[in-house]
Image (cartoon, rainbow, N blue to C red; front, side, top):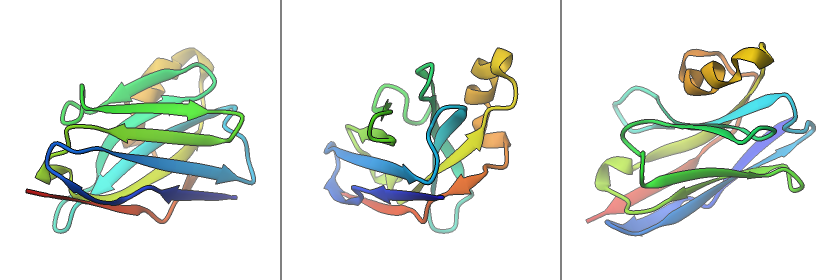
Length: 131
């Protein structure tokens, strides 16, 4: 089982990047996929989450309206499109997968994904936004 992030790099303020999270060894059915980020000297922050089977999504207030999470289930890949980037978006971004525990509380599990321990995590992709 593996999650591999790609698409990080250097962007200008106001620019865009798209991160990919490719999964191998399991399928997204029955999982939520979340994106986290951690900047140097700061705590980890939950950025966005998706339930690929139901397309339920969640965004942190800090990225709402600028980032878009999506999934291509045929490719077993989740994307994070990041637009209008700001210097404070600079961080190591990594994706994580968690088994859905209660289908009937899926919306709650997606919107509170940051609180849970995840089953699998990737190594991360660095994003640097320069002004």
